[in-house]
Amino acid sequence: MLLKKIYTQMKTAVWITRFLFSCIFCSLLICFTSCKKDFEERSVAASSDDHASALSGKPNIILFVANDFGFEVPTFNGGQSYSTPNLNFMASNGIHFTQCYNHPDGTPSRLAILTGKYSFRNYIRWGVLPPNAKTIGNLLHDAGYATCWVGKWQLNDGDMRIRGAGFDKYLVYHPLNDGTGQRTNRYKDPLLYQNGAYLPASATQGKYSEDMFFDYVSKFIDSNKTKPFFALYATLLPAAPWVPTPDDPQFATWNSNNDNALSNRQYFPSMVKYLDKTVGKVIQKLQDAGIANNTIIMFTSATQSYQKNYIYLEWANCYRYKNQYFQSRNKYASCCLLAW
Image 1 (cartoon, rainbow, N blue to C red):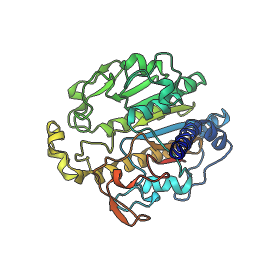
Image 2 (tube, rainbow, N blue to C red):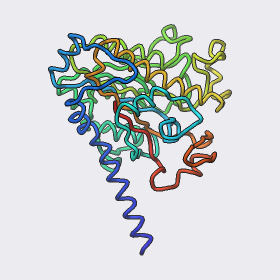
Image 3 (cartoon, one colour):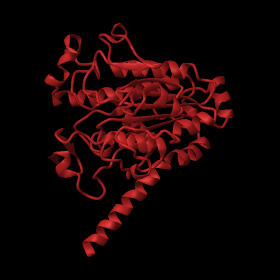
């Protein structure tokens, strides 16, 4: 009976924590709308566009949701194996939530982020966004925001459901949840979907998915500098297959048809670094556009690092597999959450 009581209390605590995560958008909007960011590393003079947007009282919002990016990865959490200077900058100059928990897999986490509900309240079957579910996209769209989704969708019904979830613009990977795998044509020569159709191979050959996502978000920002916008960027990085990024010398001659056969964990650090670099590019884009002071950037992860990626934690002073180490109440299933 005692064990059952302890288990019930722990489960309740986790539920409460996850509920708080679903409320973060509201609290951050209240907090950040009344504040102005002070930049320690660089400053940007407010432009007339920035001023016009600020007068509306509606800050822009960009939410990064990384894939297989565990609590132990960024150096601001004590990790020493990977390079994350831009995330460190966000943690140092924004809000770092040290207690944040996600679901055990990516799709349930993204579904919870979209709807603000636990799986037992919104689950129909794997990878399905309920037809009547209201999402953060719907709420912000109805509040006058321009909306955009880039990156991993992995839910149902492609164009119809993406637009039904409140996102007017999108460029996504895995749009239909039709049983096709998510480990092919993921990075180089990506299979991407836009406006109800897959892009032709001629448009993606030799290109890198995360670069195409950034370019799309960049254009979205340019076209909405004078009105509030919300962009959800569900990255593919740094999940498997572990393959070269454009910053690796192997990328130029890499055959994407061999992604799974040649996937190697040696590329994981480079993939983490490229993800962090992309976050930095978005920050720089906002500063160059003169709207950084009126934009909330959030970063979290839908899933933990793959269990066989070795990690080093300063505060643990040891190497461990994820599934062997993260068993404590504070670290198991925890993820990063930053707001800047």
